[in-house]
Image 1: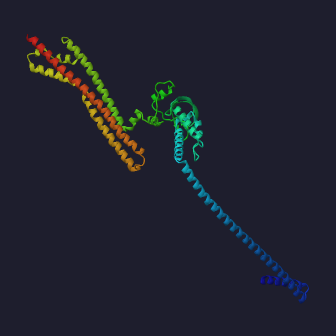
Image 2: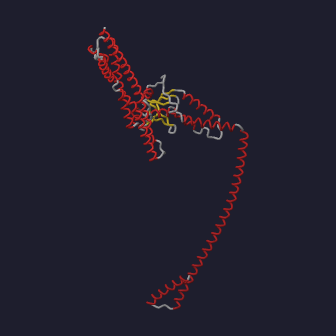
Image 3: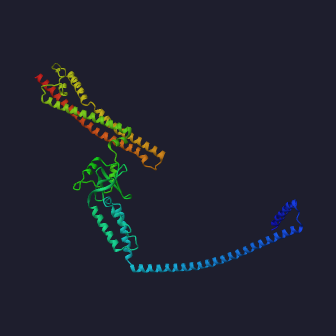
Length: 445
């Protein structure tokens, strides 16, 4: 208020100074002007006070009305809460009466719901859906209520009979198949019950989660794939995978012979090379001894016609009539010839025996090397991922197997060729001694 007066006085002074520059008004005029302005200001302030008091009364009335409305809402809330509690008690009472009246039917309904759920899961996981996908829509809303109706029971039994009938069939129909490239195409698919699915390019696996059939990029051995390709509805033989794809997947992941050899590493290839070399040497010696045995047999039949193409002929040819009186010299000549021929018969046998002993030792070397690689993998990466240890373990096992596979045949081969060589040596000694004795007897006679 004082600020307004000061401003008013300042304005008056300014006006006075302006007016006084031209004409100086009287003091009474100036007083009247100031008084009139003060009265106007007082009237304005009074109007403002009345307006403020009126707004205050309106706000108080509004607050009072809102309090009454809040009290009314509180009463309604209490009434609704009481009704809710009464309804809860009533529902609980009615449920209790329903349970008492239903008795054993509740257990029947529970079992029926479990049956419907189990049937649904079984049909969803069944490969028969590849030819009959429309059946899955029949389960929408089935058994979802509190009670199971007669119609729902009948529908579930019909679905069960249909599923059993489809599992007993062999069907060949077009179906949507996801190829290894990701492309979806329609192929002729043969379904053997609910076990095996096959197409023109190989086996097919049904994915229950995606409700789709896909062709794995890795197929089982070619023989099984060819059998499936030639499969018809009247085929007497068929490949059945009772695990629904697990066995076929396992068969497809089986490594080939070349891959197995690769798992053995450098040591494995060395074992295979030495084993093949030993087998070739043993086969060569076996053929050689067989040919020698044939020639010796012919020489025995024609002992009077000596031939230098066989050991018997070469040994007995050292006999000379002029040495009949010098027994020591004759024995030395015969012993020398026998030693030479026996050496030829037993050539290469020691090499085969050496390879049969070295092969398992190399297998043991590969085992140790593989275990070292396994322990290094464990040290670096831990035991969290078994695949990181599979390489070293595979090398250890494969080299052991290769060493035994190479050694066992070589041991048998060495025994066979050694036995034949000894047998030929006995025959050579016997026939030589008999021939020399016969010639000496004839010369003395």
